[in-house]
Length: 327
Ligand code: LMR
Image (cartoon, rainbow, N blue to C red):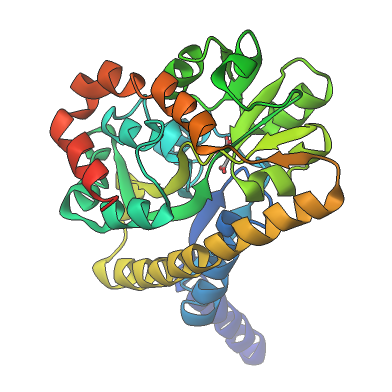
């Protein structure tokens, strides 16, 4: 009997001790692109680093390809605590701040070096906090690259886009950009783009080389114009409620793993853009068109007036500062 009591006591102690061990903090990281992209690779790297350094304390679960939430739902879900991290394109925050619209202005940044310079400047860093009042925390910028125009017809000059339907992200700036060339913009989630193109419900879209390649848009778009007319970059975000609820030590360790993962994503973004462009060319499914200086000037002239429309919302000084990053 005494033996039995001892066994029961020891079992109770073991169970009690197990219950006292805190469950790891769970970070669901939701995104919409393929794993074989700068964002997909960054998320995987983040998980690996956390597994390596914070095993038992933090667990990262990555959900790619809109598996968990589409791009129009993820921020709402984050505020409800259903997902802890995401990295939506900077074009998808206009419900939360108008300031980030700066990144959508057509022909503002001449290349990714200019984008990086602006993001690293005091003005760029300040923008990371522009979501604070809405309960979201910007943890860092992540690169994808410059956008290209794909379509069912060859787009050489703006009039080639007139009357054509283009899928855009949820951005009023991008809406104005396509209206400026008399095209018809339609705000649609990323997960629907391939089918919309395949069924010819729309005529074209704008995106980066890695998205056009990994989501096979090039297989259903006979022409891609290398326009580099805008940037598609990301903001890695979390909710203030989740972030503030972490103890300082853990927060610092998570942030350091994230910074390293972002660096990794940024390092491969440029190389990925080049190699995915080459794979598209090699596939011969889509013809990649380049623009002469004169043709490009026509797009700039048609689209640049969009800046003025959004100057009040974004701030003229901020636009000037971004423009200066081209020098
Ligand atoms: C898009 O919707 O086209 C992009 O924002 C997708 C992404 O996350 O790169």
